[in-house]
Length: 100
Image (cartoon, rainbow, N blue to C red; front, side, top):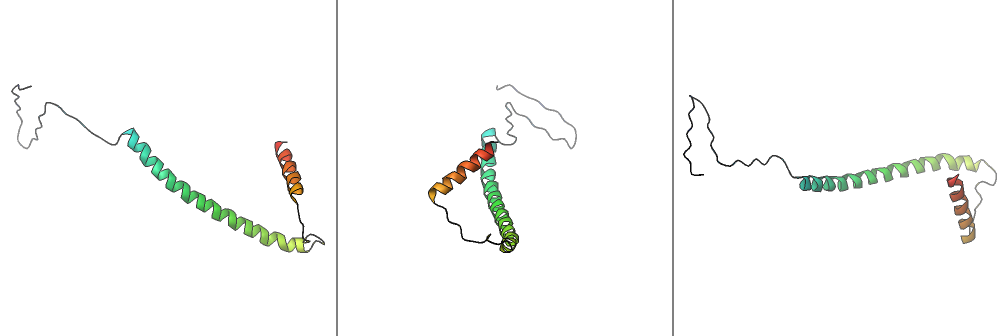
């Protein structure tokens, strides 16, 4: 490796000489994955917060439209109570209905 190297170039030339060249261009896959996960965690939180806000707004709008209409139907606004057995039956019914 101690060989004599000679370069010749003309005016306004730029010369480079090396026995070993290592080019690091960009980042490794591991670092790219780390960056992705960091950005994904931030985006997921932001999107979750946004989805919750939109869902809450839509439920409120639905309630604001539904409650006055229910008030016009006789007996629709009566208080309804459920015990644990009723809730289980309702859940079973909804699960069976969802499977259809």
